[in-house]
Image (cartoon, rainbow, N blue to C red):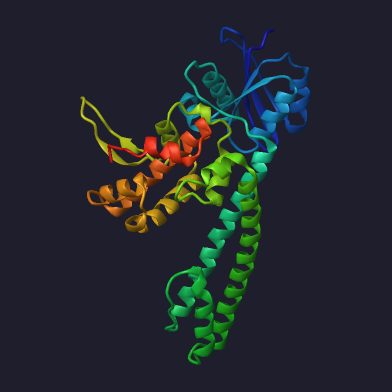
Amino acid sequence: MSISIIGLDTAKAIFQIHAVDEVGREVLRRKLRRVEVVRFFNDQEPCTVAMEACGAAHHWARVLTGLGHEVKLVAPEAVRPFVKKGRKNDSADAAAICEVASRPNVKFVPMKSSEQQATLSLHTARSLLVKQQAMLANAMRGLAAEFGVVVPQGIGRLDGLMASVEADETVPERARQAIHELFDNCCALGSRIHVLEKEIIAHARHDETARRLETIPGVGPITASLIAATVSDIHAFRSPRHFAAWLGLVPRQHSTGGKTRLGRITKTGNREIRKLLVLGATAMVYRAPRWNSVAGAWLRNILERRPVRLVTVALANKTARIAWALMTHQEDRSGVCCRMMPCSGW
């Protein structure tokens, strides 16, 4: 029995494998408990192991690579069309993964190191805490508004909101206590977010790629650190447009009969990077009148012809393309921006 490719469907406790030979004929189908996985692959001759790039996939990729196997991580959306309709189970998933890995034109996800995943853990924790902080702030504003206390938007305005609640004698004591509890939790979350941001900024200061990305207008240390930790191999993207498309910053197409129809952006790929790029682009759009550069002139020109939100997304797209060029050519911002700023199609 000669195994060429093994499709591995990972799970919490039970793993499913589907193995084929050189001609694609099934030679093995088996379930493995978690404790049996390493022993099974240790006994196998070196072969290609394919997995979905989902939770713990990069961990298992490092483990199996250490055992001498070639590991290929497949994006889940590439596997889905190969799962037979009406037969969604672990065995069918493993067979579909095996089928996708044998296709010649499939693009695989680069394996991340443990250091990259550790940095991404900081970003994940920060994003969650920021979301919780926003929820607490909105709850505070909602409760205070029930008693006629309103302040301008912004996390920094919560101190004023709390002071107004304390000073307003018409607010009942129980409502004041509830708002105070939310305020204390919001402040505690702010302190934890600050600690995580210090670690992220330290990574951005010491990582060469992140330092280079920080030179792009609208890209701060948090965005630069996230891109540097997420993109393992920038050469996997053939062009800057492919990188922007991977981030979901290109228009959705619905073209037929030679007629090109473009819609809203696809919003595929990494949501957190896309969100940070759009936030950075929004800040740069507000300062467009004072941005004296080639990029500023391009931005002011397009603002005269397009809505502000569309321009913001277009600038985020342009920022992603410049980031691709900086990481690919390992150049500073000055030369890359001058070559890439002329743009059409938006």
